Image (cartoon, rainbow, N blue to C red; front, side, top):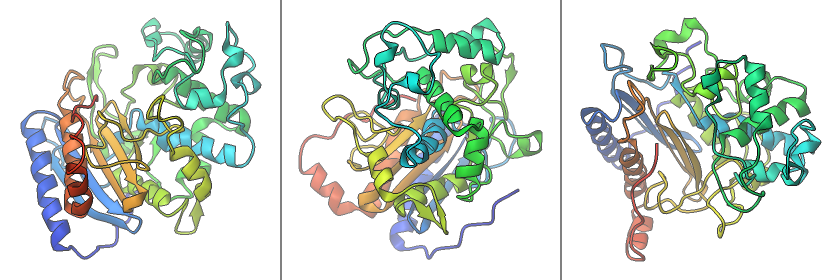
Length: 385
């Protein structure tokens, strides 16, 4: 189903200038081979102010991206999906963030694992490694999952922040154990459908292929991926995981961003309370890392750019996706690309993300930008895919 078009909002001179700036940034990204196609959407609690597309879905002849193009979300899955579910389960009292993970996953055993809490997992302080390439073993999804469950800790929990896909995989399994539903089933019933995010899903059907932006010529699977999750471990787990696997559109991410900017509700549907949203989007310990609960917050080298500051929050995805939400400015910035097409070696997405975020802030909040420029030197504009 193709979603209905967003209501047309009057284009101010400010928005028109921003649109032209974003168009130039994205066109330059295509010309520099940063990605074959992209869409940027910048808006407020009321909806999009600016929507700009560039390039095509593929380097081969193909359609121009639009708000209904489906993109592989990669690690945005962690915040769109898994974190949304965890917010609801924590708010309802079904999950205690400070409970040991073993309360919910008793088979997760090994040295010092009894000391790891749910909060450690969702703030990436569990002591787990970042990831393991278990997909290369070509095992069944159940056997692959067992390997992740058996993975030992690298350090004691709380010692350091290591961004861990394995922790997010475990969190997805906690959602399933506590809810009694599959992760994809839970999210469809309790998050995506109520919020009108009708295109956000794992394992999109073949009927949607024409709307999906292709990703990599994958050496492991030996084909150009389109509609299959790019993340190999997510694929090895059957395509549904807490760390990767979701596909979504700019239209649907606009709705999610507006939920956050509207205090947890949109069009009569509710994700969580305003207090729970603040809890999950506030940095946990700024002396330790920039991480909130599931979400990240602006830091010196993040894709939030030079002028977006806390309490803003956001996240990136390896395929070239990102979202930043700044409640103090009633602002969201969504950038969706397939920068891994045809190879993940394309690494020019970082400056594009920063340029888009900075352009939005310069155009819409010039006084904030001027004040920040008059203070300390701007942080580095580098960011990783």
